[in-house]
Amino acid sequence: MDPVVLGRWMQREWLKALPAPLALPAVALLGPLVAISRPWGIASDRASSDSYVCSIWYLSALVGATVGLWLLARGETVWAEMGALKRCWASTWVLAIATSVHALVALGSTAATVGAVVVPWVAFLMCVAHWVSLGVFAHRTNLGPVGSWVLLLALGWWTPALLPEGLSWDRASWLLDPARHLALGFEPLETSIRVLVDTMPIVAWWVAAALLPTRSGHRR
Image (cartoon, rainbow, N blue to C red):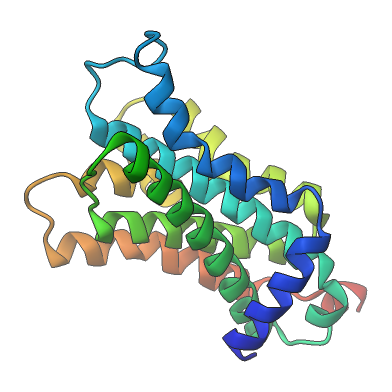
């Protein structure tokens, strides 16, 4: 499906899909909220601005992925006519656009209120890609909008947050956690090998989504 056509469809449906339009101004407020809360001691002045930027990017990207899932639920009659591979590509474009737009709006508001920010674009884009691949998988499970949203949160947020420390658990975090890319983004040696390795869970979730049976396959 043409990404331009998908973009126009998203714009039209986004305006109708309450409360989705409220998510964009909500993430735009994240930067100003940090700036306002510092003098009151709610956000520590001693914390590095990099940690704030990464947290805002992570949270806004999650919100964008949630909006993307909400929009995908509104087009189920269209996706049902597609094969698994085409449906995965359509889901990827919708989620990528929604996730990127919300993350960039939040980053822009942060830069406008907090000041110049350091942006490790490779890490930021890989975080978005990880949320997108998890979202594609959640959408392909056919759990409905609420079930897909809960699964997305469980895979990308709740489970990584509950994992204990240890080498074996680090592998699970590597597979699940989009925030891991942000933690590595500010390290001085961001080699191409590390980037290649960190793309593996992103590709793995996308392939797993493509291998899931379609709804028509469930009926048979």
